[in-house]
Length: 230
Image (tube, rainbow, N blue to C red):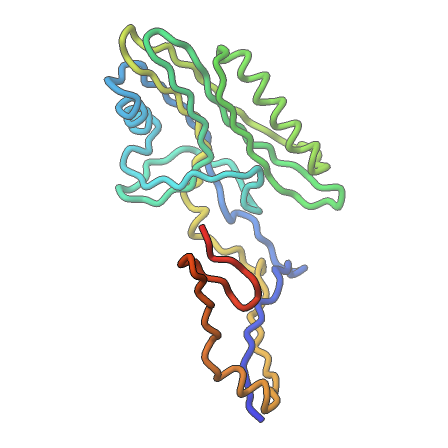
């Protein structure tokens, strides 16, 4: 008989006596760059105006924000910061107009738990019409998750590019600390279990992996029938 250690990661659990408040926060910002010599130049100028010109940006997808999200006032970020952002971008050229917006909503589930969602939008409409579209997107995200809104905030801006130039408008929810936090009590312990292996299982675990058979055309086929042909 042999022994093998199997590490099992326990599902995330919330302890009833511990809080996850103040775990992660962020702020909304918009910026406009109508004088870019290229699309990339306009985008970079907009990042600088947004306060992210010296940051390393991780663009995030999805509607949910970290548990415990709270709105924070903007602050300067150190050079080289790794920053999570929900980003909306609209690009135009030679007098074109477009808008971008982002918004968050703090909501409550039917069970009474609080959470927060985010929505972004890019459009060719003006800022007023884009604000209406953004609020509609927020409502859809809450509706599909059966959430009741408690508070919300949006930020929308528009750009009109200069003649012969590229323009960019950015709207962002900036979460500077979300990659560094770990809510106290939000994770369970890692359990280590020990299971006995039979002699046959022990021999199999030490045996070399089966080699994939190679076909006449040069492609490979695994023993289970899985083809490696591209």
